[in-house]
Amino acid sequence: MVIRLLPEQNQTPSYQISLFPSTSKKLISLLKHAHGLIIFTGPTGSGKTTTLYSMLSETSDLVNRNVITLEDPIEKPSDTVLQVQVNERAGISYSAGLKAILRHDPDIIMVGEIRDKETAETAIRASLTGHLVLTTMHTRDARGAIYRLIEFGINWLEIEQTLIAVTAQRLVELTCPYCEGTCSPFCFSSGSSKRGNVFEILTGKDLSAVLKEARGELQSYHYKTLKDAIRKGIALGFIKESEYQRWVLNDGE
Ligand SMILES: [Zn+2]
Image (cartoon, rainbow, N blue to C red; front, side, top):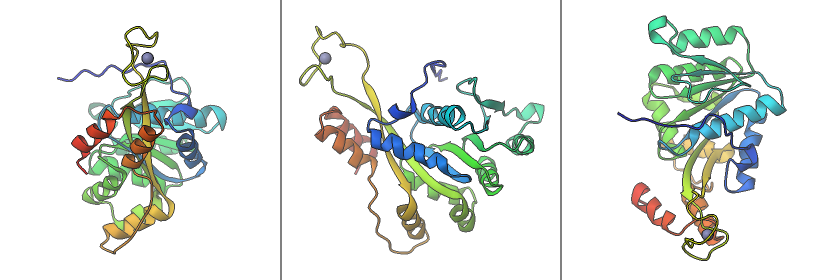
């Protein structure tokens, strides 16, 4: 049994979604799209849900766009967003829930997680009906999401027509800004966890190139990967050097 405790109240402000403000900006600018699919990937505990909610409340508060979510379960109750809980026994499956949501004609639909054929089809169908769809997926990196969609039976045309961007994220340990090296036990911020999120964002030309590569064409692309982001953070002194070792161990490159 796994018990996950999620703080319900403290929302990360959107400019703090990423450790790098330029990345936060790039993520928020993705919300300008009127329709299409944006997928947030990462392992459990990487902060996908937190990122998604920060983005949703940003657009619902600031741009006044109408947001409805379809989740199983609802991870973070929200005051600004209308949330629908999937309940198979009560007849609210993903597809039934989506049908009900479409009648309200929201601007943005959040599908909790793509984890099988049904949820994948729901997310694709919602974005084909002219809505902006945000969702999460459990993959190691952004490219992995494309291969997973294919496994779930989504065809190339549907992916090319809908997919705007795929992100991948990791929560990394940050260095103490007051101490050099290890944080001193006498430091006032000692013991408090200092963590931040780094991202890779696959979109535009790079996304098209990765799509073509997945179809077997030889391609080159130059987007900044998670590994690049972690290296940059270490070089700038924000991220602990041990995070690079952890990256190599977990993601083995
Ligand atoms: Zn310190």
